Image 1 (cartoon, rainbow over the protein chains, first blue to last red):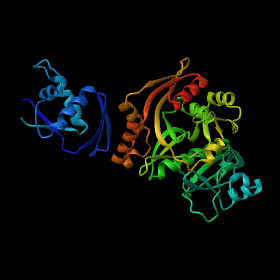
Image 2 (spheres, chains in turn yellow, cyan):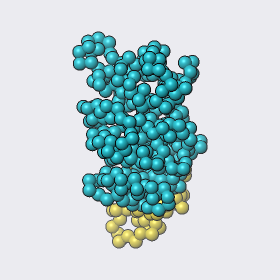
Image 3 (cartoon, rainbow over the protein chains, first blue to last red):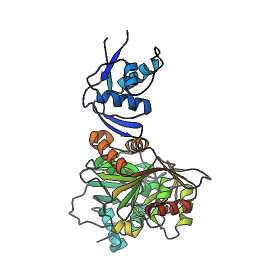
Image 4 (tube, rainbow over the protein chains, first blue to last red):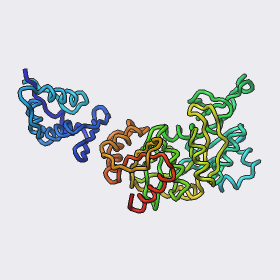
Length: 93
Length: 304
């Protein structure tokens, strides 16, 4: 079963990006996180299409990363991290 | 009136009686103490600070005194009280003045919630603030003292106090706390600096305080705008070097050093992000204080 992902909810966080890295403030938790290049690009893609639900690999591709299909474990791990800190949520297929 | 206008006898009477209403930047603290080292410390380090009227509103009511009971006489201790409560464990008797200083810091970062307060030194040139957020042991206070006695105006060696509404940094000029080898470094580097006797065996090692430069106290109402954020790190043998720092890393450093971040939440995030956006941001390594001060002079002049 391939999971699909979407942004947690509109306005769930504040976001500042410089160069390739971002820092987010998550309203629900009050926590602040630094995001690395990959996570920043991924979240940037999710923000520009907030209502869409795609697989992790599809999101990464839309963020400009060319995945070696079909192995998208890395993408799933990244999504799992963003889910843990409250930025994205998973949907049933 | 300032503290040095009070005759020693009157200062002692105030401290042992109703309290001394001492203004430090935006804060007025009523201080009481029967401990001679505290009296001497206040006379020395706060000589130029304003004294408010006896009936003035005071933000904090604190005291540093001997505890009651056996510890008053056997291995004497000192205890800090805030509104009659004792937020810290008693300390050995010779640590009275350091305890007062640590207690005053605690009052500000615990209770002044109208501000966003960082654990960070801050100085200014021509109204432009240099923010130095860093953990203990990074060389922050040494660098701060070196700059404060060489053309930079001290706003605080320990607390960067942001006023959210104006985005300005509010000075709280108070004694600079130096530890261990830094004491001798600053004694040699700034012979004009006025030191309290070194107090050994504190939780931070040997501690000595330096009286804030007079101009810092006289300009305590002159706020400053964030201009540079520098993450300092002492590294033995390293040349003084400023390296541009990623803003995401700088913002996280500010967040991690903000005492009341969780209270302000989004407001603090936006304030710190704005400061990060508008400042030049650097990492800084150094080992020689003269080199460091020269480099910061060039930075202020637009070079470096």
